[in-house]
Length: 308
Image (tube, one colour):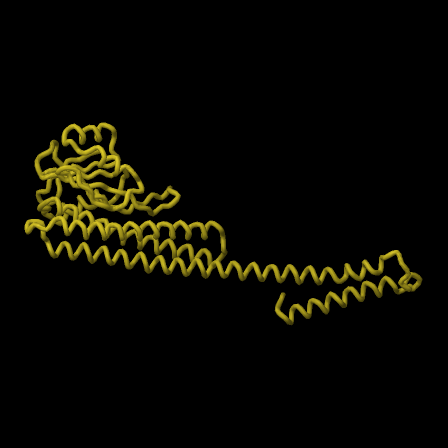
């Protein structure tokens, strides 16, 4: 699906392309790809790179074309890892600005609505790229808050009952934080390279650049804090589980010993050898009494050393 957007007081949709308009393509069809190749002669290698879900943030030149790839966060409830990141490619060439993402995200529609609500004027292609990086950092922070809430819910559930489902949920959130951390660091390096490329006075917007840098740093520090907290939580619950297993094993061993003593006495009494109790009328009662007394003694002993 493609949209042609032009910035007036915020982005508005147009029926056809005009210079300096923004062509946004999400989950492109084959017709969309063919349109970009034939109408704008976009390098096919760029489109192939963007299609790779594991593509890292980077900058690449081919002729007059500049490809900027950044990673943006997405949320997919039914996915194995609900919070993940995907690449979005921004291709520019003089007055042509094209963005391609093979996934449906909340970021681009929200960014368009934000420009309309604030009546923001996008002056040039570097301005658009910076604002998209800024928007991605804001959404990283938004999803990080949701991840933190999910961590707290999983911790509350684990405090009541340690279940594999809750531990697996924490593991998935930990994976999400790793993906977020890697993507944010990649975006930071890519942002630094962009600043070195667009050095002309017409591209310099110190306030916007500082705002983007601040948001990226905040996202980086936040993901590090949450990752450290989650790692500590996982280690704590691993220790709790190990301690619970040890307690169960001690109790099972104690029960086995308590039950083994009567069995041992009964085994000696039942042997087919002379034990001088065969003719004693109280032999069986004495054997049972001894077994009970030994069991009681073992139980009291284990209670005193807190094995029960």
